[in-house]
Image (cartoon, rainbow, N blue to C red; front, side, top):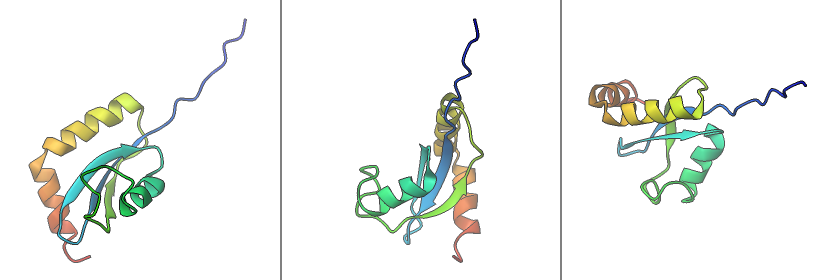
Length: 91
């Protein structure tokens, strides 16, 4: 009996920033669609009314478990977030 190979979806960890230099970290299957949701007030409650948001970091595609772990790690990593803010201040 042949087993079907089921492709597991790949998730991306992303960091977005608004004009006040506030960062938000999340995971998504489609980053472009997710940022559009954030910018129209249909994303996370935290991002609603704080946009517009622009992408400043995205990971390589990851399985969902790895993406969730990386998201949690980045949310706690103040040095990483500070470096992102400093590297993207001019944009």
